[in-house]
Image (cartoon, rainbow, N blue to C red; front, side, top):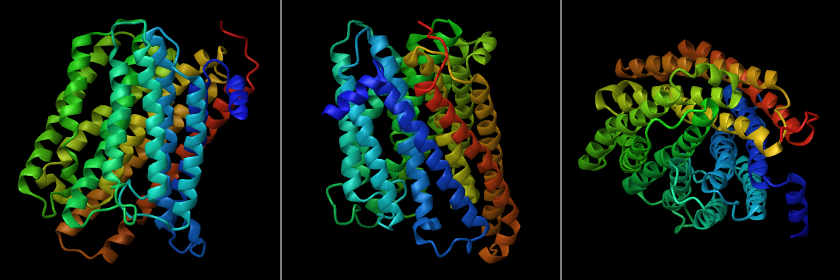
Length: 459
C-alpha cells in the first residue's frame, strides 16, 4: 500500500475527488478519439480496414463503454465524492479507499479497451464487456457504495440533502442492475436465451442512463446551481417527489426498445405508460431547479461550472420530451432501428449527463485544489466547442433517422438510401471534431489545474 499512500499524499486532502476528476478527463479524450474512428468508418468503410483492432465493430463498443464508464460516471462520482462529505458535515470515510478505487477503475477500463479491441465481446448493447471485466466493474461499484454509505453513517448532519439521496441510489441500484443485465451468473455466455434475454438486457441498458447517469447528474445539479447562484432550493418537497417518482417510473421503461418484437403485451404497455409518465419526475426537477435560479442567469454565466450544469438541465428537458414521444408505437415506426435513436442517445448521455459532469468537475476544481481554474478562457472555449458539436450532431442524426425511417416504411432498399445519407455522416464526423477538440482542451486545462497551476491559493 506504500505507493497508494504516496499518491494520496500527493493529491492532498481531496484525493478521491481529484483522482476521479483526472480519470474522467483522460478517458473523455480517449472516448471521443474512438468515436471519431468509428465515425470515420461510416464515411469510408475501407479506410484502415486492415487494422482489425479498431474496426467499426470494435471501436464503436469501446467508444460507448468509455463514454459511460470512463468519462461520464467518474466525472459525476468526482463531484459526489466532494459534495457528500460537505453536505453531511463530516469527512469522506476513506480518501485512501477512494484513490484505490480510482486506480482500480482505470485498470478496469484498460482491460476493457484491450479485450474489446481483441474481439472479446458478449455482443449485447451496453453489455459487451466480457465476464471478467463485468466482475471488476461490479466490485468497483461495491467499493464506491461502501465509501459513500460509511460516510453517511458517520454524518454530523441529521438532514439528508437530496443530492445525497441521488448519489447513494445511483450506485446501489446500478450495482444490482449491472449484475442482472450482464447475467454474471452465466460466465460462459453472459446472456440468457431468446426474448427473456432481450427483456433483461433492455431493463439494464436503459437503466444505465436512468438509474446511474441521471440520478448522479441531478445530484450534481441540485448541489451546484443553488450554491453558484447563492439561492435556497425552491422546494425540498419537490426534490423528494422528483426523486421517488424517478425511481418508480424510470425503472420500467426499457421494454419500449422492444415494441416491435414478441415480448408480452402487458410489459409493452407498462413501458409505454412509464415512458410517457417520465414527464412527471423530469418536470418536477426542472421546475424546482429553474425556479431556484430564476433571475440569476448572470451568476450562472459567471461560473463556468454552473454554466455547464445549467446547459445540462436544458438538454435534459429535450431528452425527456423526445424519449417520451419515441416510446409511442406510431412514432416508433419511423424513429426506431435507425440513427434517430443514436442521436437521442447522444442527447441523453452526452448533452445532458456528460455536460453536467463537466460542469461538476469545473465547479469543484477550484475548491479541491484551493487555486483558481488554470484557464477560464479554455473552459469557455471547451463549452462552446462541445455545445456546438453535440447540437449539430444530434440535429444531423435526427435528420438521418427520419430519412432512414421513412425509406423503410416506403419499402426502399438499404443500398438506395446510403448515398442519400453519406453527406450527413460527413457532417456528423465534422461535429465530432469539435467535441474531440473540446475533450483535449479540457484534459489540458484540468491537468494544469490539478498539478501545474501557478495561480495563487484561494484559501
